[in-house]
Each structure stands twice: as structure tokens, then as C-alpha cells.
Image (tube, rainbow, N blue to C red; front, side, top):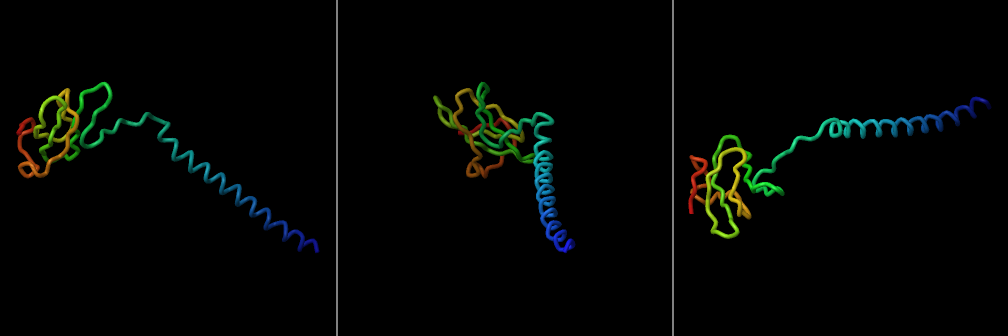
Length: 118
């Protein structure tokens, strides 16, 4: 009878140990995922397209690395216009209120960043 009693207790202990191990593993995984974010300040990642950060001029971030494209720039007090931008950040007019890639304007691609059109 002693063996039967011990065999009934043993599965309960195993389940308890497995439960504690699962909780410990989940905690370890959570800490390992959070560790990189708290170890160093995350680098600022620029968003592709129109950006209007507080306290800075608005800009357009062209994320492709091998093309120049036409964007349409909308301005508050003046009319809209097209501008050729290359890869990276292009600072826009002080009164710019929006900018977007315009694939319909001259085929969308351009040769000389800085060129403008109506």
C-alpha cells in the first residue's frame, strides 16, 4: 500500500514542478525580450514619406536608396508644387502642410533632386 500512496503523490508533485518551471520559463523569456529595449536608448527611426515633427521644419523622408522621385508638396499659404527628391531627408518649405509621392507626375521618377515643377 505504501507504493500506491507514493505513486499518487508523485504525479501531483510533477505537475506542480512543471507548473513552476513553466512560470519561470515565461518570466525568463519576458525578461530577455525586454532587456534589449532597456539596455540602450532606441535609435530614432525616421518614417518614410511626410514628417512634421514638433519644433522642426517639415520634411520628406525618401526611403529607397537607388531612385529619385517626384513628390507633390502642399503649402498652406501658397500653391502646391512638385519637387524631385533623392534618397534620405529633404527639408520642405516652412509652410508645407503635406507631401506625398506622385507616380502620375512625369512617370514618378526624376533625375536631379531639387528640381521643381508646377
